[in-house]
Length: 423
Image (tube, rainbow, N blue to C red; front, side, top):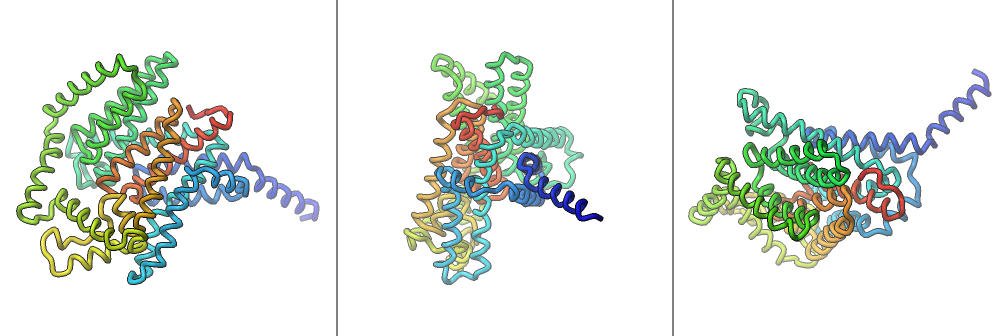
């Protein structure tokens, strides 16, 4: 090979490496694939997340870092992760393996500012939303098929839950249901009747699946509150009364028509009574016990907490010599606030609530589809985190990270005077 030929190849490689548009498109594809795989696989999500980060390297600039860190929606998630890292220092009686394990659930929050900055520049958010919605729609259709013909419910422990578990499925379907209803409102303004009816039908199909087939009790708490937020956002005062009247009618109809809904609701009372009367290890009883103990742990170290990764060790210490639900040991108190408070005290809770507030405020001011999706994701995460640590859970946490990052980037892109192509 001649020297000139070698120079041409080197120059061609350098030109490819510096082709920002090509790498940005590759990053968009990686995020779309990540969103599509989220309802199905944790391994694929991790793989596509790594690929995405690799494709970002050729286009990384210090100006992006400075721009991201100027906005609290970007630096507050980073601050929470840094607190988890620094919190390993005062977890003095906890093995280092447990401390490192305590950092891991929070690490994905670093993706929020990176996503915000990326989609502030590219504006290709609609593809990500569509990929997640289509993927969840396939899961929903499989769920209905399993419900209608239980013989097809193979490879799963729960009827109507083809992959993962009913808690994750309920959170995914809730986000998709209200995302589809929001899309219907925005498309209706463009006088596209068939597409509008299609999104309304899709949203109601997700809700019907949760009512009749499979869902978590957490989703049943989120749905009525998100419906109120939806109504207040999109309907005039004169239409609100009719809307709420119709919702009440269909809610009562669903209650009497769905044995599954009644069972999931009524069992809470039964579980609580068994916990109260006989110290039984029921789902509701364990949550109450976890919360009670976590509040005691928090009161022992209210400012800085017990340190990163300390939760399981605290439960093990408290369970010694006890029986029944009091002997249960867990590393997750099933409440996001208590999860943070036990490890990082009041400082951690302040950072957590500040992040939620800033993200929610980011989406409340504008009437766009992306702002609605962001508001649904933040509201759902706050509500579900009353009963779980969904910000730190894998699937639910990535739902929050993706939606806030992608939608937040689109809103900042719009506020900078650029066209919001994802709306």
